[in-house]
Length: 102
Image 1 (cartoon, helix red, strand yellow):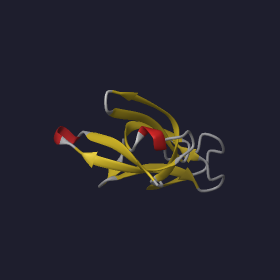
Image 2 (tube, rainbow, N blue to C red):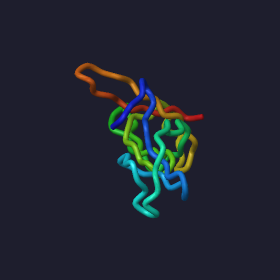
Image 3 (cartoon, helix red, strand yellow):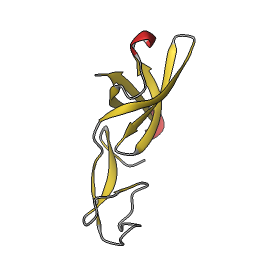
Image 4 (cartoon, one colour):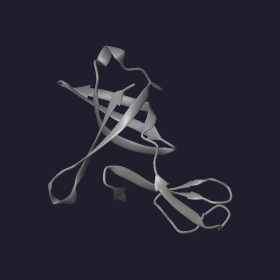
């Protein structure tokens, strides 16, 4: 994944505004040029699961789905709840993704 600090980089078509992932210089729908930009860090819960005390979640951010851990009380979680994306850089240039309810 392309990251700028702790922001995920995506591309968007200049003409039709389609989000292109993985990033590409040209739109696969209309063949126009794309621009790089940061993905919005507010999304929604698609689904979640719990094992022991850890909640795993699939979050959707501008049509891009990301798997991470969700820091919340399991009783407060519902599909389509709004979440904020947090990206943490780990050792060896690896990243972890987590979410919080908003």
